[in-house]
Every structure is written in structure tokens, then in C-alpha cells.
Image 1 (tube, one colour):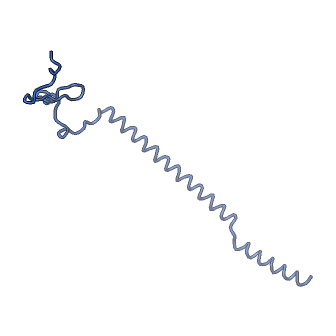
Image 2 (cartoon, rainbow, N blue to C red; image 1 turned 180 degrees about the horizontal axis):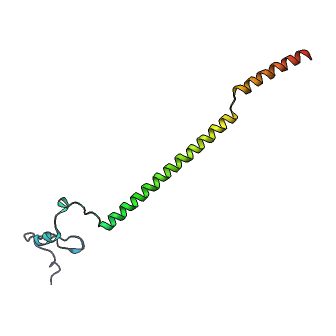
Length: 114
């Protein structure tokens, strides 16, 4: 055997080797491999049980997110009501302003007499 026995001559048709040494150059190999990358069919849908499981998971996640959003809206509403109550409790109102003005006048009157 010659060291060069694996090398083909330039005039001989060359067979190409694909991954893992698979012959991809001959017509028989091309027929076995199927269509090339530009002719690939649409990707297959997952089997029905997997599709149903994915759909159920998607619906469960959607339901959980909607429930979380509803709970957040409820909490924001509670917080809004508490803030309104605190603002009313600690805000300056007209009756307090009138009382302060009346007490100032009374202080001035008392200071002038004593």
C-alpha cells in the first residue's frame, strides 16, 4: 500500500465527506440525506400531548400574571385610600385656620390690656 492511496487524482470525481465521515458527495448519498438547507420543509409541530402541555402551561402562567395584576391593583387602591385618610387627617382645614386667626386676635387684645 502506498502512503498516497487515500488521495484521489484530480481527474477522478471527488466524494465529499460530511460530519462523522458520511459520504455527502454522491447522488445516492444526496438522495438519502433529503433536501438541502434551502429546501427544508416547515418545522414540525410538537406532538399533541406536548402541545397540550405547553398550552396548559401558557394558560396557567397567563392566569397567574392576571391574578398578580389584580392583586396589585387592589393593594394600590388600599394604599390610595389610606393616603387620602392621612391627608385629610393632617391637612390644614378651614376650621383650624379660623380658630388660629381667632386666637391671634385674642392674644393681641389681651396683650394690649395687660
